[in-house]
Image 1: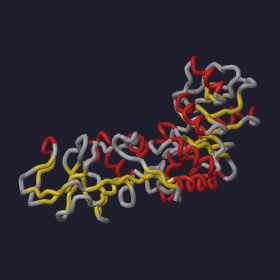
Image 2: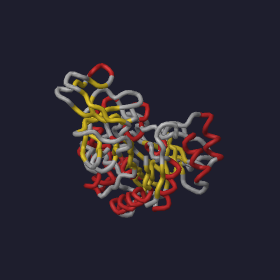
Image 3: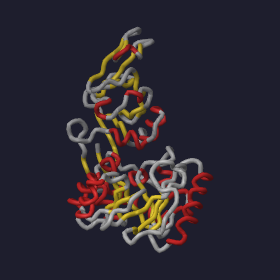
Image 4: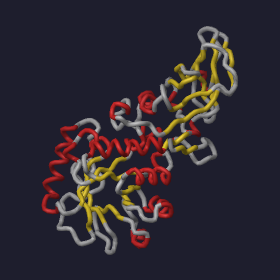
Length: 333
């Protein structure tokens, strides 16, 4: 797997142009959506991101070692025992109930997501530096998103001196009225479309590429099958290639039927994806070591997600990148 930090920096600049003066907060939770939190956070800050957001205090502490001076915001709830740790590490917390002392906090207002957040804002205490909400439908139902934005604007108007934040990646690209003072961008940072279509339509460049190779080619005679459960049986003599990765690497079982790229041509995944291997249809025998593009030109995460009936976020987060399975190479093109 290759992570192109140059593409990430270009995406940051694209998002900053779309935001028209509002700050960009780079979301690198879940190990940077599988891309590597530390490398991506550093690149985002270098390119102009004003803050870095994560989900947990633990994630923030890992980043603090690498980014001693960055503004780090914990989006998820912090346990009581973590508040002192957050204070010592100079983290900022998002809260929806009690406001701890001695820590910079952002109060979340629930305007329609129906998860975290207060129903009504109270006069902020001195620890409060920001107010925020979470849009539920900015990637689809813009009418509901606009209602959320309107409610947030009205509720926070008396406290406009604080940093107000509502937009996610989708709203940063499609909903200018949601920009306020800052936008919290995750998936678009990595060149993935929040709308599930071609990210290039929004001038975003994929940061992640994933390649493998043909480990062996074999010829199936008519009536022969490949993989568990015999879910693919050759109707005629057929060449298949075996690719040595599977669901343990993050290439999920429900990706049967998607296409990967072999020697520049799309090849359909057939049979049951197993833990360590999957099969692709070939038009001829190919030698061992023939490159296979799993994610890259002609094989986007958006296309794979459509086959798996999920979202590109989930697929990216599910790729095993701890070095025991996929090897991650970072470049700065």
